[in-house]
Image 1 (cartoon, rainbow, N blue to C red):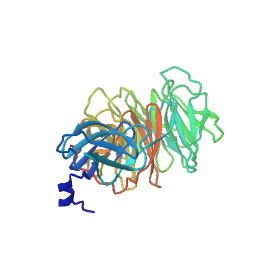
Image 2 (image 1 turned 45 degrees about the vertical axis):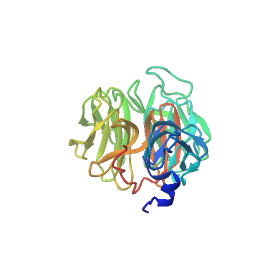
Image 3 (image 1 turned 90 degrees about the vertical axis):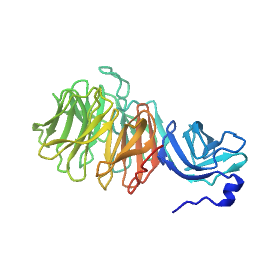
Image 4 (image 1 turned 30 degrees about the vertical axis):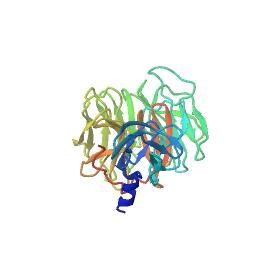
Length: 352
């Protein structure tokens, strides 16, 4: 659809929104609104509302606004009012908080019934009252596991069993559906991100520099060696079977690695700040919680290596993309959900 701006609207000074970039955010994230008629001749400051909640403005000009999504934003639209006139609503995607008082450090995990698993990781070496929460498909938050110290990475195998890495002691635990954990393997260094390949091998990122491969019969192999991470490795498999790994370093120009099934390492993308949780859509586009060109949120990198911010928000550490079009987003203290069909999502080209 091509947006036009009628001569009568210009004459009457009616604000008009042409596009919003990025088109998705969680509360606290910033969106750039492009259009016309945002500042009246009287120079009155425009008002931006997401649903009925008014946003604060970081920048206001006649053709561009930068608005911070307020707490309580809802409705899926943004409007601009200026000098007694209001724009037509423009569609946006705003995340809704479904849980707080959490401490995830990587992607949440979602099982086939829609249950979400998320950690309360805590400072290294410190045992917390609840180490893993289960959030039902109806968003009821329930303590699920209490016995683990510093749970970090989560992954579900083909049978739906949940596996958890613990960076404190380098162990991997398998968790039953009723919330009982059993040690599955140990000696994985500072075990952080984990992911299963299509045939059931488990890959574990030891943040000191090793990616381990564990067969279903628990044989241990060194799969690849990378630069050590100051925080954690985050792992995800591309639909073609390549393993992608992010691991923050002290650089502000970090990399996402691609590792072939044969263990050959290459750099897929460079230029992210503190890249963390990774996920792929069915078309092979990569989504990563990171900073990019001064914006924090979820960065989309397409199959050709072109990147832009797809979702704006601070404190994001991970995500899970569902085939239904739902996304689950984890910050360092909370969990959000939004309807966000990332398939076919265009790169907006510029946030400025």
